[in-house]
Image 1 (cartoon, helix red, strand yellow):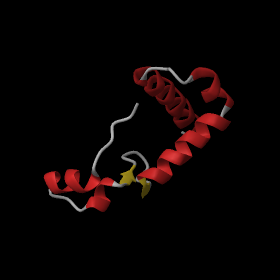
Image 2 (cartoon, one colour):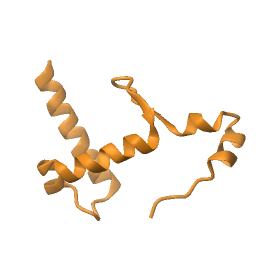
Image 3 (cartoon, helix red, strand yellow):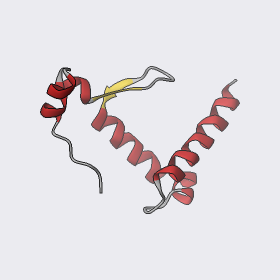
Length: 81
């Protein structure tokens, strides 16, 4: 199960505005959006993409998920160049 975080307390401890912790910024393409929006997009893609559904199961460990996602990202990135 995921970790629950009190955004207000975390922001105060880190001395940042709470909204900063709710945003997602991609270091690769610089896409920025609300973290919940990005999470919903990721869940939708993993459900509708046949390759992801085949390779990532409910109990796939985090490291395994990251490995699969990196492989797919690198393959698609190579096709674009």
